[in-house]
Image 1 (spheres, rainbow, N blue to C red):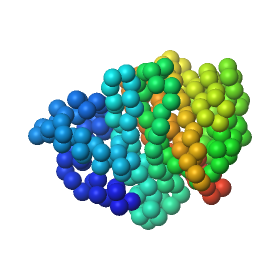
Image 2: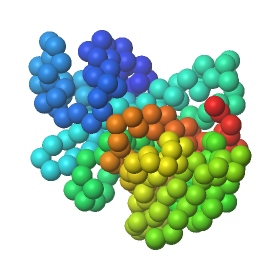
Image 3: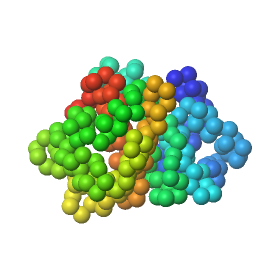
Length: 247
């Protein structure tokens, strides 16, 4: 928590975060174009932001891309603000990543990372068992179809309509799941994209990374949904109570 306050206590670092909020996945050269910033200065400030987990990176080819990681800020809100405003809304989520399969899917459009105090088996089950997925999903009351290679998984809203359809394309047991992302809530003609879960045990916790690829214009808001899902999943595994119905 001290690292977050230190990182935010500088207008230059806040400007870098604002830049990533406007356009995620920038290189050092992109960020160097900010007014009154030298390359060395940008590197120095990015190191502080990475140490605070407010920025996460993904290396692809010769370039290193930087992404805003908003969940540590959500952690502060959950700790000090949410108890006064909406106690039922969200659980805290921290994030960090180590990415696999560099170059296979290219540069992700969105990344999110969190640490969850649970076993690798428990996290894997929560991501691959339809009954558990329904238990912690923030909007859906039912999930049909366990994620398995070539299997269809559908997320069903309380009114019976399908919110999301996914097809599992790859699975590495307990470490990686790749799926399509077909947002039925945006209409029948909404373009599909792709997402990946990466799991890495870290002592008493597991590090979960979420990557989203091939997002079409207008789908930038998916990030909020991922934050809500990650928060509810974390709460479900750590406390047994999901964060359902937070609109």
